Amino acid sequence: MRILGIDCGAGRTGWGVIESDGRAHRLIAAGAIRTSPRDALGVRLLAIASGIRDVIAVHRPVSAAVEEVFQAVNAQSALKLAHVRGAVFLVLAEASIPAGEYSPLLIKQTVVGHGHAGKQQVQFMMRSLLGPDVPATDADACDALAAALCHAAFTARAVA
Image (cartoon, rainbow, N blue to C red; front, side, top):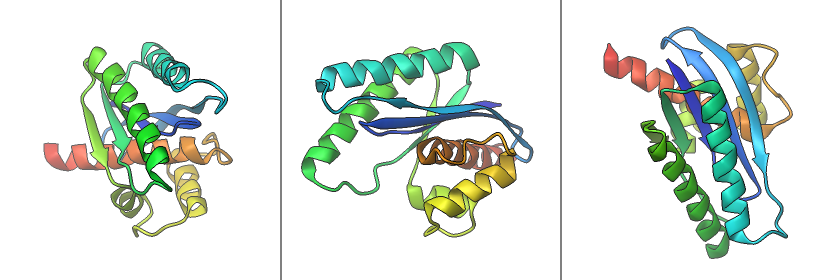
């Protein structure tokens, strides 16, 4: 199954695509969509939506995993993140791609073994599970890949 993982952010939205049968996983591609804080919110949302559409067109995922909102620094940040999530879910719905939502705690618990793992531990596990081509310096892409792996694990359990 080809899974698109997404780590939403107004400045950087990470994405990662994996192929998984629930036990064996393979990295297809990963990256981040960057927007400028100088641009209007609508322009930023359009860039994120267009970027996710492009990823879907190129990699053809059959399902998606989106990291849930964990904690926002302030109300303004929470609102921007909610707008980004709305744009992402709209694009997924347009493409008829079902999406699972997972908390950062559950994602870390699933891929690292404990829910309070740091970014470096997540990045290390992504490279261990998916190989050296994982963009180790891109925390947003690694988080998106972790969400995709979490989705693969829970999808495999549901099927079994």
